[in-house]
Amino acid sequence: MLKGILAISGHSGLFKMVSNAKNALIVESLVDKKRMPAYATSKISALEDIAIFTDEGDVPLADVFKNIKEKENGGKAISHKASGNELKGYMGEVLPNYDEDRVYVSDMKKIFQWYNLLQEYNLLEDLDKEEEVENTEE
Image 1 (cartoon, rainbow, N blue to C red):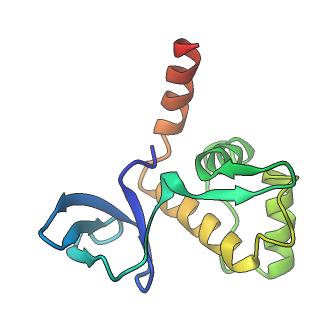
Image 2 (cartoon, rainbow, N blue to C red):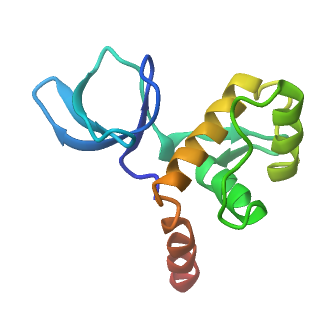
């Protein structure tokens, strides 16, 4: 689901990896479908590699997205522009044991903004399919 979806520092939104170039990745914006090179000097994070700190350990971002999707019945999450207290309250509902000392409001804004972007472009449908595949493998 999150494979190939990237966040690039200095650029808003999310990007899909399209190809490799000699010294860069070619990425396509999910929002406007424009392609651009992303160089090694940029901080590039794959969403599948991101995890959220909790009191018991780290929780993959995909699991947090699943919790939000269940809470909202597949709809949009809280706006990333909501107040810090609202974001903290919402985060407590979707991931009750998140580490309040290490997960900042700025992190929560990114999580909810990314979730809403993925939801808007129907890229969260794979969450359910991934779960089914995992269950059949067991």
